[in-house]
Image (tube, rainbow, N blue to C red; front, side, top):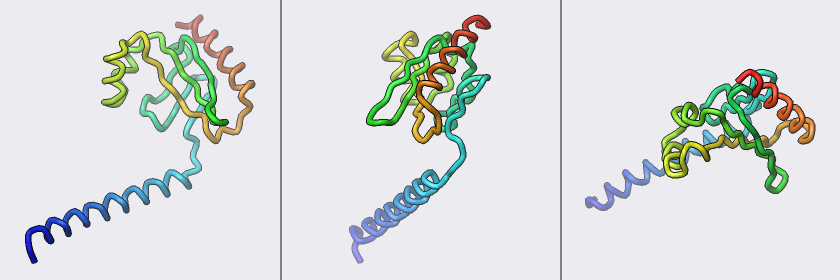
Length: 134
């Protein structure tokens, strides 16, 4: 048994471990039925991105768009630097290159059981109310 066989076996174990972890994570996400996004009177919460609750008073405007039937909403913020500090490493790097004025948070609305026009109307009302309290 040579050195190359030992190295090969170690990399094979690493590959099995990563594949097993990926399979478990994918299965967990696939069958997890908890809400991923909540849009209510207090603000927007996306449990997938780590920002926590984004109150309406912090949102200056939003843009709703779709790609092949999947809806997304982009939130422009009144104080982007506060939210950049909560972002991940890659998002911080991109925000640094683009500048804080162009920073926005995009939230995926896949699998939400809500009418797009009702959600747009509700969000418009809440953003305008939040502007009064900002």
